[in-house]
Figure: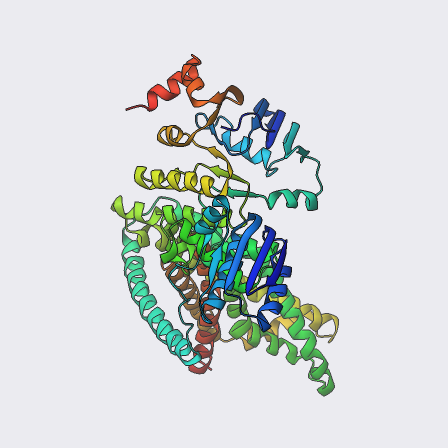
Length: 249
Length: 358
């Protein structure tokens, strides 16, 4: 794809610790615009921690994280929110606000971060919900939705502000293969239409084959591989080979 | 970003994105007041996002009513974005009509009646198993009674003591001034004994227990319901009422009168301080009068009603716990409703007892 571009996110020598335990050890990653990057690895290898450290949901122990060439780790909250407005995140279980309807969940970022009039917001919300094929459940509450619908609603909320980067934490977790495939399709389609850069944490092999441009393979807090999926399969790293072999039917 | 009107057409140029839309919308609205364009030109648009498309759709819907409208000149990339985000073809949806005032009133009345009926059903089941449970401990874990008694009873002691002391103290203080006017100092003992034994002891204790243990019971059962633990118990062929509710029921039946006795005692101490310190009643007189005025009937009714309050608290807590709907948020709601309902029930029951055994 667009290989010669400036990286949109660049992580340098990131170290994360829980108390004494090192979760991430010296991770350096570049993520380029327009690509789907998949962070993979077994359970407990630090995938979600990496995501959370990049987004400052947890403060890294050491290292640097740059978005669009701007260092974010010491950024004031005001300046960091300007960056966050250009980012969407799909959480593992959706993380929809339970006390308000799906419509209002999607409405929140639009209401609080733009000055658009109510009619325009209404149109945007309904379009976003129809893009994730949730038109029939607009006024339902999160508790009335199935797991897959919750994730799609959360996706609609994540893309409410037309983000340039979308982070997804285990989008297929807890979904059946069909729903999970449909969600992957949806994410790919949205990338095409919105020209988004996408970072996905997953260990779903089917997903990886369907959507990955680049893969980052973590094992025990260390980065074993960073490159295209093809290269990963041919790299001859035993952990990666096992990972892909065991998952195959 | 810019917009001009010439020769029956609106010409947009620049970036049509969320940041600039509100300003542009005002300009366009002003233009549209006096003009009716038949043509929207998008040739000069460099960038558009979903807010921009929504804006174009808004113009479209508005002008389409007045006549033909032509969009033209969008580059393929811009057109692709427009096609993706266009809301023109979406089915019209409106939120469900909100209930009217009378509808809500009727709805809540029906709900309340239904709740009451359902909780009576649950109560009958609890009473049945409570009786059975006296003779057979099948389906209950060993030690659960003791554990619950400690949880519901002894851990409530400090707060019950503190509040009862303060209540006794305040009661005496407020009446002391009046009694002193009449020189009826010694009657402080009568007053205190009657109020503490008949009303304040049982009711304050019940309200504290409702807030403390009733909420704990409701949230525990609701959490178990939400996390499917109740279903797991059922599948293990255990009756959730016998396993979860009955130990609490037995425990609270035993500890509630003890808590009330304790509350009365501490309340008397709090009031006694005022009687002795402020009204110059001697300690032996105070004790003697307090004991004289307290009838056996008063004590029996007091402990009796405290047990009834306790049962109401457990049944209501269990009822709202089992009724929980919709995940973690439901647990909070169930807990709140159970506390409100059990305090209400305690006060209503207390009123009934007061009428029956004056």
